[in-house]
Length: 232
Image (cartoon, rainbow, N blue to C red):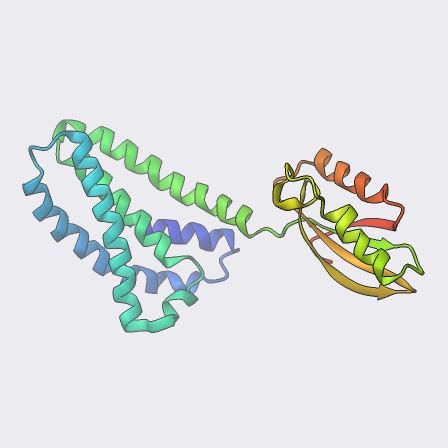
């Protein structure tokens, strides 16, 4: 059920646009439930006398592997359609399987049932609310800046923009680029001026972005610098 709960969280973040996928997720999660039940039942007999940390590690990793196996089973029947769901199926089942392993290891000791319940709820909440935030960050577009060079520059001058402004021979700078810059591309020409799109690193603070813009504007080759919105 934790895998379904995580999937519902993704749907909620997407304004419930793919809510019709939830019944299918419940149905295709049944193989994982069966794999978890029978595998853990047999495995617990073998590691019953192992130290608690060993049980936690073995069952958690086994649960994650079972999540991968469930995805493989679904792919055999559905093909690529399994990845058309409105949530990352593999992630939901891997985390769901791992959570099942942790819960099973705690439930194997009756005196720790309250701990098992509390830990299970905490991990489900972490998986439901933590990963979507990380995924949103990872998928968010990198900031971009539109740089307009002065009109009438020669192709050699335009090349200097790359070699003297964006790129730098200072080996201490990451990737040999201006600090805070991750890349760039040619944006064509407009009214006799070359246009460049400079991509900034996602983690930059507002102060760091302002510093990069100042450095770009300070070049004698640059006419105008404008930060693009994510909708541009």
